[in-house]
Image (cartoon, rainbow, N blue to C red; front, side, top):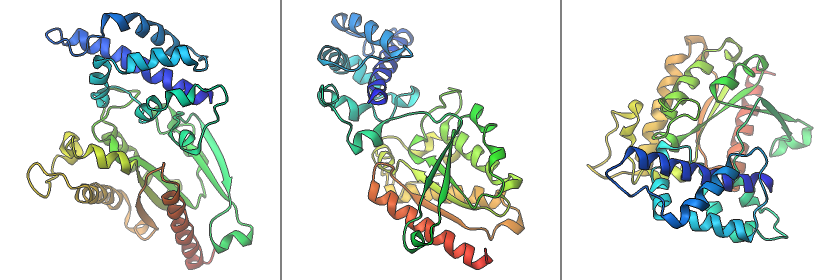
Length: 307
């Protein structure tokens, strides 16, 4: 619960601070100027959002958050989320403020799935594979690692001898900038990281599973923001001028990653298992289905090599 409440305060701080910055940059427009009635509330919530320890939401704080969230300048700023670091959970939690502040509030599965915590260091998760192999007593060890630049040196040395790499790329972030470098497009950074990981010696015989994640957000965004805003996708041509087809755009992005894979793989590595899955982390059934497919693929690979 503290994480979810923290997400609310962090989000409203990002939006309020972002609105102030945009208002200063766009002096000829007032669309990012917070209304006088909400400026004091904004300063209060921005201060809370900058703390290391956050208070729990209560009715008074919910009223303040909602009032600021509904300010036209904040909504205008929210629509510019690609230039800010607005978390994907923003709209969901803002629409559920009253429930989150109830004294007996217990997070639902959907709440937990929406919660955002940046991965620091290396987190190990153990689970039994799906399907028939579960009876064999096998255990998968999944190492969740941070993708930020300063995190990579912490984990690359841990992966000698792993069976597979699950590389998660947020397909919806083609128009967004890095948290740690606001001059770099996130998708361009993902491309460079994917290329770098593929070339590591410890992964010479390792299977690769690429998750093109946040497909649900991609579906909505592609109708408003063309793929071509990303330098990597400049050569994308929609089915018809001005018409964005989700599957067509997805297949284009998928092909781009396939090209990186084969260009980065030495001739003696191209026969290693490589699969691409479009995923939505919030869709539990889809995630289970995807992991079942991965489990089956891994078992076939082991049987083929006799390991």
